[in-house]
Amino acid sequence: LKDVRVNVPAAILRGGTATLYCHFDLEGDSLYSVKWYKGRREFYRFTPKEDPAMKIFPIFGLEVEVFRIELDLNGLHDDAIQVTAPTGDYGGFVKLDTVV
Image (cartoon, rainbow, N blue to C red; front, side):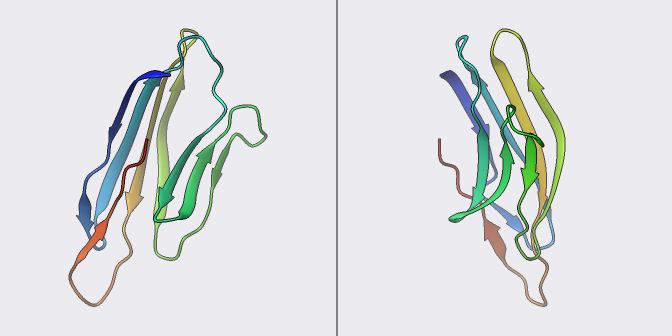
């Protein structure tokens, strides 16, 4: 695994939308899975050898929309999803953490 690039905003306003992007080179290996978490809770998983390959796990108030998954024959992988943060009666931010 090389050339790992993850683009995740540090925080988004409540009710706002963020795009989470991940790119990596498998160097000829096969992909087992890509997982996204909010804190310790998994909210999205892509496992190409499972059926269905894409799973979205509900977290109250968090909306997930997958708009691009690309895996080419050279082992380059792009994964992009949009997340809408929970809304509330008060202002504030939702923190998004990145772990590679």
